[in-house]
View 1 (cartoon, rainbow, N blue to C red):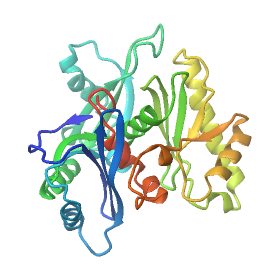
View 2: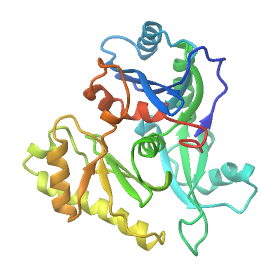
View 3: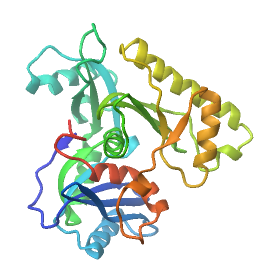
Length: 312
């Protein structure tokens, strides 16, 4: 999403980082010819430590000082808007979009950092070209940048979870015929629709799906509401974007109910639902458990960023 000028790196590969006041998720990925290796992966609660102290300690313990780092924003720290592409030079698009969305922002427009990423050329066939606009709160962003820089990491870019998820599917899934990839979370779910590594549609689904969702008495009602939102997104992809139907639906691995969740959603959607098993496809030291990989999915996706994937 955003380029950032950092210090010269002294560590091979890229660190993906997801942080908030309660926890740190960090993944360090290196590339060896055609191999992608997860060198480090940590998900730590801060307990009584401050975010700044916790990250400094972690970077020191893992000897990652100077590593190029891609920071992925927390879901509550930004908003995404789908808008018409302004008819201006490419260098002026972000500035033009700022004024298009100023009345939609939940912050003063002067406090917003705006970036854009275009949709593929064949999206919205026979209609005006569209772009996704990302708006982040400047003071919060500056605070996060300061924390990362003070830790000894070298901040090279800033991304959003939608792009991190896209990086995961590009690396570990065949989306040549289209793929709907869904991360189900208690804080709200997120859904991407990609084809050939390009992001066509992304949306946040406010229906919460906690770790014990299937055991809740109202699960069937929640599931049906979730399935309706997923189906509406797929219908939009077909009818409004002029794309062929998506037949491949996958969810991110969950802590303990992945298979049951797949089956339950498949019943509601009347369509097969699979799991994107990046756990076993990503080379990593034995001590990095599947549970840790799952908790760090966004950080791993951020660490998978390349010049052509995961960037605006």
